[in-house]
Amino acid sequence: MPTTERAAPALMTMIDEVRSVVSKGTSEAETGQGVADVISRYVGQVTLLQPENREGDPEAYKQHILHVEPDGSFSIVCLVWLPGQDTPIHDHVSWCVVGVHEGEESEERFQVVEANGETHLEIEGTGINPQGLVVWLSPPGDIHRVTNTGDGKTISIHVYGADINVLGTSIRRRYDLPVKA
Ligand SMILES: [Fe+2]
Image 1 (cartoon, protein in one colour):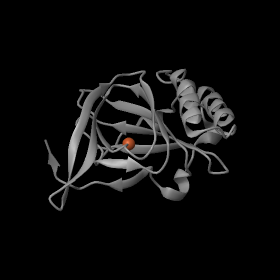
Image 2 (tube, helix red, strand yellow):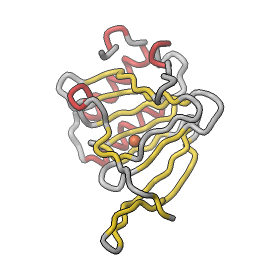
Image 3 (tube, protein in one colour):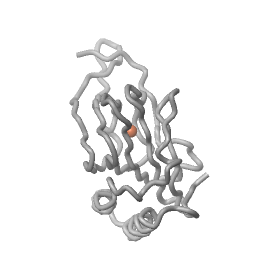
Image 4 (cartoon, helix red, strand yellow):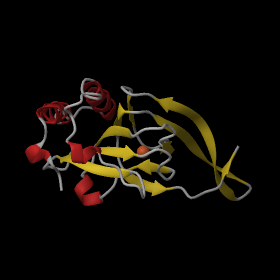
């Protein structure tokens, strides 16, 4: 259930600013960069998230839906990883802006390689996304896995150009393929 109705003031103004960017209906690149500029001003603000939206789940990383725009044009969630938790290797249903709110994310990026009639994954790059970093990405070429390799909680804010209430998740596809060097 979206918590927009009782969201903190900082989240409300962030949603308003994202809406004003998305509703312009400009190119995906301009929308992605514009939303990233907005999110950059909010990640790390201690009043952005209600305590219940900072809660993790010992079973797996947890998604909290913060807002779904009534016309389905964008959704905002936060994801919480406890130490050691990771996502599957996946790509996304739409453009996506990610801002690291707390802690840091370890990210591996992959590409699908077909060779000798078989399909596997190769690591394209790895990196640490520190608190405050905001990036936007756009399918295709957005296959990755995110892991919390730190000692504390990792929380990131995600804006998707899709209706997450309908889809349930931003994950388009999981890639359960062998990873080769
Ligand atoms: Fe992702």
